[in-house]
Image (cartoon, helix red, strand yellow):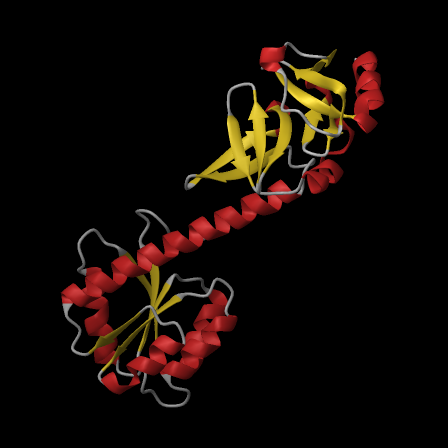
Length: 270
């Protein structure tokens, strides 16, 4: 599991010079708040890859010029490592900086490393890991949402927040321009999506009453012509102004001509 929040970043130091590794370890372990935990050291790319087969880390401090495969080659090889760590280069040679950033290194520190630059690199690494964690959480939530009805909830992104709405609380979905309104007894949410896809995924618990509305069968209360002040927007496809009342919010939604019989049947079935 990736380190986040206040957990020290699990770190590997890769440098062919033992004294350079010792100095960098001392600097890292002396940073305030113990933001890193040095789990291992390696003197070559081969040693680093062997270590990573047995361990997981969040952050690798990597020299460039080493015997055998150099640090740039090792950084490319790390792309295939499960839970790929963040790479920060530490080198005496500034001329490789452009190439380092082309392979998505987080930072490029030149020797001798200053404590302030090292602290900034560690803080950036923590921020990157938090971004990864948030992205993984979002992807997981999306995958669960796509598994409806087994997942039994919707995951909605709204004004930068990730909201989990139990499917049992949803009264209806209504298409509005490019979005869907998700109505519960307490509030409304907006989400992207297609009513047709939702209809297939949710199954018989929800009834398509109109091309723009999908209603939970348990929320259907009345089929009729609502009071003029509460009437839904007029629609050419509505059958003589038929609409359905949705409880407990008492919203009235238009019923298409083709779906009047299905709504009657659903109401009769209870």
